[in-house]
Amino acid sequence: MAQNQSKPGAPIKTGASIRTKESNSTPVKFIFDKTNYRLLIASIAVVAFGFILMSGTTDIYSDTKIILAPIVVLSGFALGFFAILKKPSAN
Image (cartoon, rainbow, N blue to C red; front, side, top):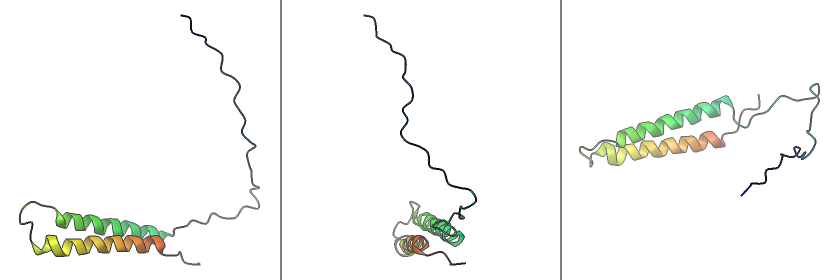
């Protein structure tokens, strides 16, 4: 019942690493701008506020819970959608 243990082999090389010249590199261009992230954070806050308006166990048929809160949540999702699709400024 001896187990056959072998030594690990040499690491396998999968390809050469690609290096770029530092002097010819251009600055990194991100997809989102600072305003996109601010709008996205604001949309998360609006959605959270809408869910807070919906929470609670007393008076589940109040106008705040069945009318106002879903409108706030949907507007938060719309703001998030806009934040993702907004193109960054050319500056």
